[in-house]
Amino acid sequence: MIPYINITNHSNEQIFVYHKFDNSLFQIGIIHPHECILKTIPIGSTLIAKKAIQVNDIIIPNETLSKKIISDDNYIIF
Image (tube, rainbow, N blue to C red; front, side, top):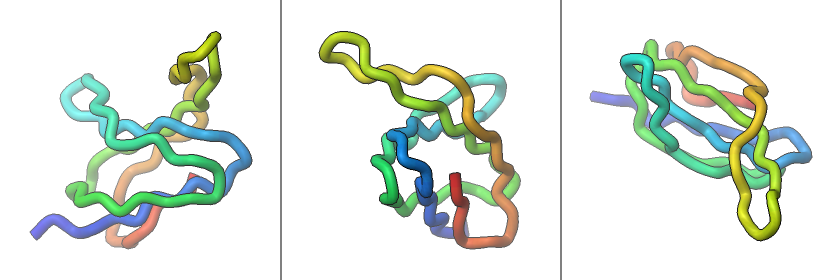
């Protein structure tokens, strides 16, 4: 069974969260400051958080803020 992982954004900035799989990035969410999402993600997977920036009326991912590998914990904090 794949566990539920609570992914929390403790920063003051909006972030994009990606699941890295076979050298590809799959977007799993956009998290607003001080909010969280609950997802099912296999243990051992890599999550990548990227800072969101606004260009005109579009919000796009920019620099990588953090990379985390999912362990036995039920939460990831960025």
